[in-house]
Amino acid sequence: MAIIKCPECGHQTSDKAPVCPSCGVEIAGKIVKCPYCGEIYFKSEIVCPHCHKAIPADNEGNAAERLRNNAGNTDTSTSTEVAVVKDNATALTETGGNTAPDADNKKKNGKATLIVSIVIAVIVLGTCLYFYNNAKSDKEQEEYEFAMRSEDPTILQTYLNNFKDAPQAHVDSITAHLERLLKEDEEWTNAVVSGSKIALTDYIKNNPDSPHKQEALEKIDSIDWAQCVKLNTEDSYQMYVDAHSDGRHYEEAMIALKKIKSAEVSLDEKLVISNIFHNFFVSINTKDENGLTANIGEFVNFLGKQDATKSDIISFMHKLYKDDIESMVWSLPGGYDIQKKEIGDEQYEYDTTFMAEQDVNKTDGTKVTNKYRINAKVDPDGKITDFAMTRIVE
Image 1 (cartoon, rainbow, N blue to C red):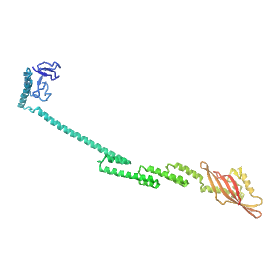
Image 2: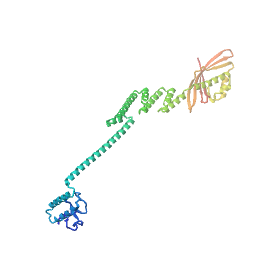
Image 3: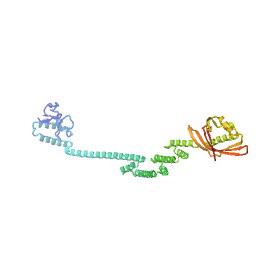
Image 4: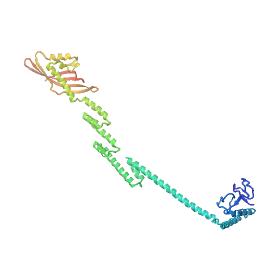
């Protein structure tokens, strides 16, 4: 009888015990000792669980017998186990079994494992390197496309600094793009410093896609507006409106233009005003009452009389022809001074000053010439609303 470790739970027990006192597994007649490594295991197992070798069929009984013979001698168990291993090794040699020492097998297995590990490591490293290079290439391509779309020199220079090993074609394209931007910046700085409309116009012409284009247009707009305000004429405002339909000061220009036009008397307006007074005095010459009052308002401040009527005007004409007057001729030498004033939406009133001469032929054959300054006012309907005469004494 020998003390062994239970193959199931490892508890020490007798090889003759029917069952393990610890776990209850069957022991007697159910175990065998490996002739190669000395491991105790169940007969039902095909190979040794420790060295993974099988006991030849003809040696299985011998191994069990030797295990029983050595049961009473625990002191010599080790030497007996060595003898069993040697006997089984001899038996395996005779039957053509595997006689390679376990150490050699372990060494060979270790070498194979090392080789496999190295191969796997190389594969893993190669795969990582492949994906790294691909990722780096993709990153470079992405940054290249972004830089080419950019108009910021800093972004292009950053690309050149970060991708020194980039494809030469990419480097050349970025470099050319950067040089163009730097040149544009230099031209822009010179144009701004000069403050010249010509320089700004040339910059836009030479750099139509520049990010400074809108800023340059706004500066030109400001220059034209300043010049326009300085001249303060109808032509200057009209030029600004024509050149800057979407300019910052377009509305201001339109208001100023309208104001100037409302104050300036056009040639057509001058003709209308002059014809009104020409007809008035011709009607006096011919004693034409209808012609005289054709351009007179319903109520007029006439020669100092407030709210004078057309009848008052006709009476004035007849009073001019005294008994000693044979004929009378009024003439207007010209030189109208007309001031235009807006009194409503595009409704204008005209203050007019001009000279008039009166040639009087008397019945005694004498002739008298008188000169008068006329101050009159004409409403938007072309009617005289105010009329005053001042004789000029020479």
